[in-house]
Image (tube, rainbow, N blue to C red):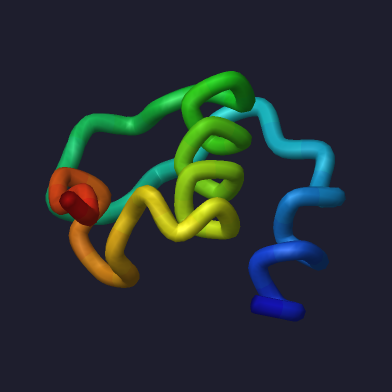
Length: 50
């Protein structure tokens, strides 16, 4: 969790995830916030917790 909090403070403009299309800061923050709120599983950004 601490690394996710630290990553949230990075000033990103474009994120290149590898196997999926790149995305911007809004989506980056959304993914981190959902992970920290335990609404999203670690790993693939497509998997969400029930």
